[in-house]
Image (cartoon, rainbow, N blue to C red; front, side, top):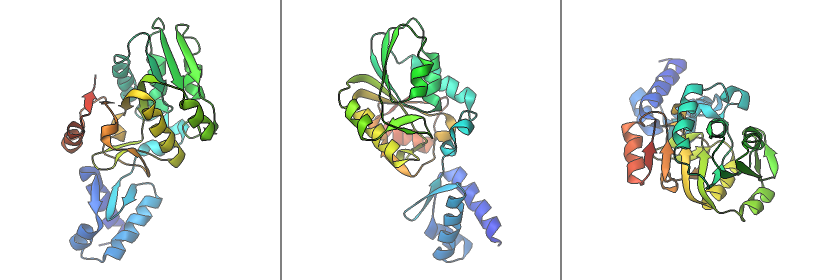
Length: 251
């Protein structure tokens, strides 16, 4: 079998199962594990998968640049935002993460709902500028351009003074075993800090983020009280969410 054909079959298997094991693949294709590991390394370099110990997980397409991510799953993100809006009560203090799905949520907020929104995203702050009933608290720090959010020590220090009712967290991957993940180390760190400052964490995930993983783990599934999606997760992911006590909210 040609290497390209084997890689295509491995990718198809990943899309069906969500993960593969190097040892099982080596046995199936009658090649060495070193050969399979080389295949996985090359596929990882192409952004097709995320390598883990002993195998690989399907990579998240949500790690693309901001302009490209703004064009991905637009209807899905709009549905997630609409469902998430129903979880917010007037008068609450809400932390809004950065990213395209949270930006959609910001645009979906009713203009007559009194809220305090804390965000480390200048994009979110600008989107809420004309919502006169919403008080916006903007957290500063070093700008991480991929998601247009502030990260670093200054952001973490400012967050230490916040106590919120809800934190709406954006992710690039939701996986039964890998949990919630993102593509940047510092961003994963600040997401954990934001979660610690809220009574409940609500994860927003459009369909392309389900069953995939990125390089940096934010936390286990149990760190969230709810997962807002626009469809049903796979049976495996659904069982893992239920076991972790995470309620699934959809349209």
